[in-house]
Image 1 (cartoon, helix red, strand yellow):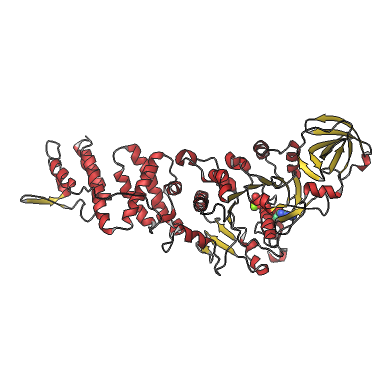
Image 2 (cartoon, rainbow, N blue to C red; image 1 turned 90 degrees about the vertical axis):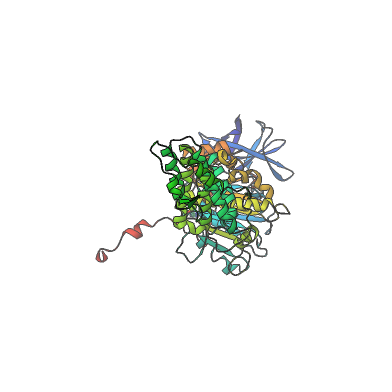
Length: 589
Ligand SMILES: Nc1ncnc2c1ncn2[C@@H]1O[C@H](COP(=O)(O)OP(=O)(O)OP(=O)(O)O)[C@@H](O)[C@H]1O
Ligand SMILES: [Mg+2]
């Protein structure tokens, strides 16, 4: 069938074909190019009786080695690779049940199972891409189901955290325990009316960065306000005696600042009125009596402006306010060791704002006010339930709880259904959990002894080139993709729109399953970002059937086509059956 080599162009070898009627079914088949070495290639195209063979690697001592340093000679003889060697190239050599995993079969060679060494795939970050309906969610479900269906060993200590953007995976994993009773699935939801456990994050486990993300902070000056609020909450939530003292101190300082601001009397009076109507304590408010020998009146009267346009009692007010100043408290950030509520935070936040001079400039006022409004909105909305943890818990116990199913067993699949919240909150919740897990892993005595896999559906909504780097100095997903491997925190990014994903994160992925993909921007982006993926591989992406993907990366010898089986049970992701939903018999309409 194969004739002479008539050209070698970069990684492509052009071979004359002799029997044009036998070309059927030879696309993507593997061939040897044998002279003194045995080079292996894949037929990537056939045009005008010429086969275009993409060079992949070499057979050395009966083993397939990826990469071709020296091109084959023009005298090389071309023939199909034997079935035994095909397995060595695209399959798992020497399959072991406990260390390897089959994920599907080859659509090119019947009955050749395709898989990987579990370590090579799951010990680094991976990405699963494809257009809508291409088979990503079914693929993920199938892989995880295969992982948990092993005959003798089970991945009991696996911890897969799935951020389930559409609430699809419950149906795929909920009943796994019926066939493998040793394992458990844990479902968290954002549906406040559901029977499932609601996502609840203890506020006190969050840091300045987390709160900044939650409130959509954009400026460094806003971080200072958040930090101050958290420092105040340390006192507000715990030391009742101290709270009044500190509140008085903050209000008094704000008023002293206003008095020395150099504004007109009317401005000063109005601002003090404004501060005291919003921020007051039982000891310091507009009605607080101010004593003078023989004369007592409420504070508000001391602010009266006389006929000459002056606040006559300026000095008296200064003296009065100075009595509320106190130096005997030190503010520290909360260390996660005590409970506080959103309400405590809100209270602390309001006082943080005046202590940071909210009334001193319009700019500061605007920056502060926007955070204040967002925090108030959070406290007033149903979203508050996600931060309303009922009792004190420390970080280690909280993570342990996430990993424990309702029957007390270790949960291996922890599914967060984030379908019921808006994109912004969903993004922040995925970031908060990812940071929590990453920080926990980083502080573990024995590095990477408990691997966590964070699998993000619709990853392009969360793993973006956003403002975090400017604001916080890092983006948690980029940090995890760069450092997580060492600590056993690994990301699985699933997305229809890889071109919207953060470049840093994508470039750190080691394995890829790419389903049918049409958008040229996405195809180009992958080509640019992913090493070793050739033009020929990218061309195939447009014509893949649902459930078929190209797998490549460190867990695969070569880019390989994989036909996956449908998962059973399926995730709730099936296409809408329009005709069944639309049509009714004329009699019943
Ligand atoms: N392995 C498979 N074999 C046959 N058909 C499949 C396979 N995988 C998926 N499909 C078909 O494709 C449909 C969509 O699959 P899936 O929900 O996994 O797509 P998706 O890539 O996750 O889409 P989206 O990006 O919209 O979430 C399935 O309902 C099924 O009909
Ligand atoms: Mg999907």
